[in-house]
Length: 90
Image 1 (tube, rainbow, N blue to C red):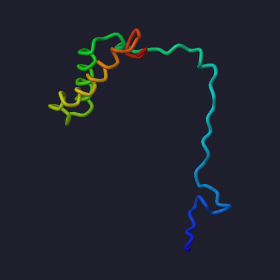
Image 2 (cartoon, helix red, strand yellow):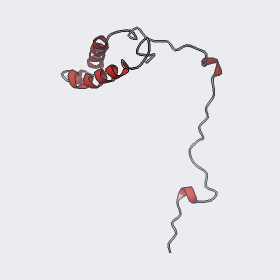
Image 3 (cartoon, rainbow, N blue to C red):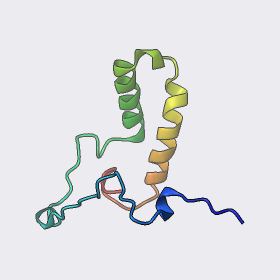
């Protein structure tokens, strides 16, 4: 029988990665979430915004608007089936 030693099974080996350190911010728990100016806009308006912004920052995407926004439209339609006052709330 052959035994293969792996780093995780080697006794005394210390990980080269630093441990994750998470700090809890209790002062933020009671803070209400804020939403942007597009939170109460229609699906069509949000999709138009996506097209306008994506072509402004990535001109090579021009002409792909239908393909790229079909997924966004689907997600927004799905979000409409959930309760909430706006996109952020849903």
